[in-house]
Length: 38
Image (cartoon, rainbow, N blue to C red):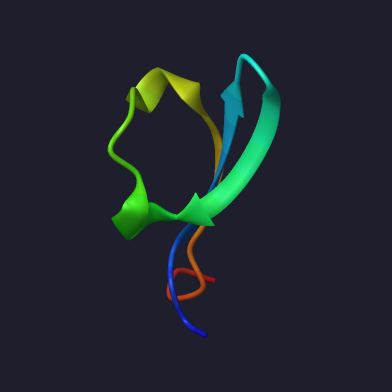
């Protein structure tokens, strides 16, 4: 699957999700993996 994945930090720990599904605070993004930009 070729999609941008982000790692976010929440009050409950860390979570990974596709960037398209994220609608939270951009400050919580720890890292971003973009398979198209290698």
